[in-house]
Length: 584
Image 1 (spheres, rainbow, N blue to C red):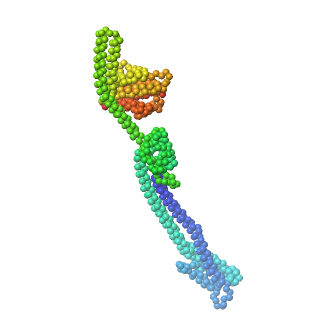
Image 2 (cartoon, rainbow, N blue to C red):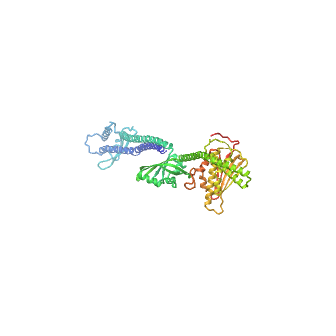
Image 3 (spheres, rainbow, N blue to C red):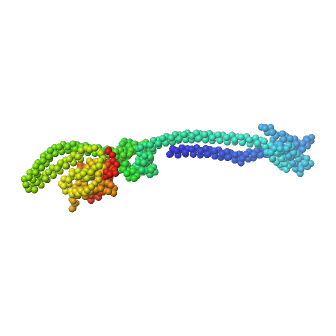
């Protein structure tokens, strides 16, 4: 944009310069014309008149001498003839350059009161004043003896000499003016050529700048030019998009305000120190804070630009937004952890098969022996207490077998198919792992289920994993609150499963009266690897896995929690009726 403005300015300068040259030439020509008309030509005319008058004065003196001469010897011609001869000689004077008569008319008028002659005898006129620009001069005649007035003589002198002088001066003035105009035109051509070269250079510079701007604009990295003091001088378009500022808003802002100082990344003082020390910084993980307050993970590189006047310098920062990449890495780590967890479960399933095989044999023998004892006690008419004891043994053996089978089913890998599932049975299988734990830990457990529940479209094994994780978190929360020795506190967990006929879906709720969560923890509780447990007590993957399974099978999850009051998780499960599903 600056190059375009500079190019436009050069066009304006060229047009303005041309106008100035034209005005200057017009002014000089007008000045020359005014000088000629009002100064030089009148002076020439005045000078010519003075010269003519001086010449006429000389010729008139000859006539005055002749008219005052009274001592001429006898035999001389009469005065009128002598005067006529002098006038003829005056009329014969010519311009040596043009050979034209100098005087075109002479008129002599005598004063007969002084002269002793017949009145009118000495009055004479020679020639005719035919020129338009003749110079008229009247000279009084005085006696050389007693300064008496003898008369006057009138001269009509040709103005051709004046015209020739005027033409010559005007020609020289024209040549001088033409030389000045040519000099000005030469100067204009030189200036115009220089401006043309500058315009061509500016055009090339504008194209280069536009090409460079296109390259910078098309970059998917944010560029910042920062002064030594930390003020942002310029940015590219991607920087505006990434941070949410426009060009006017971000210009002059301190680069330290953009960097998230509270993060683990380097601060602006550290970056400035490194640039002063080594001149560049490469691929440093840092954090930016956008206009809306959001936190961006960036990969930051910087280099020190050439020094400006005064010893200061600018720094070029290149920032690549890696928030998406980091999020992908976190998701990959989550998937890897889930795969590891699945591998452990698979190994546990294989171990459970062997353990179940090993345990089922002695359990079968115990159960068979218990059956024999029960029959023996019944036929031996023994007391009821022995028979009840044998029944308890048989019930516990059946319970142990059920737990082993549930653990093997839960841990064994299964085809990830969507099928109509009895959610109640899945909840019961998951609860079977916690009955004894809850009893030992003194946790009161209440299970509320509708008598008749529709089938759900879900993978039963994955749903059991959701229930197990939620029950595990609930047990941890109530145990933690019990450690705080809250007066009158009793651990309690309520599990509820019911059918919402209005929305035609199943709702599974787990409520506990444990430590609860603050608003900040509640917002992040399902983020991968986020945990409030001590090191070694949790991985931060339990609720993340729950959230992933919920999203995978089009379920919904909602969490409500109040710190030191309790937490409720509500999972919405699609019913089989009217649900479109496919094998994954």
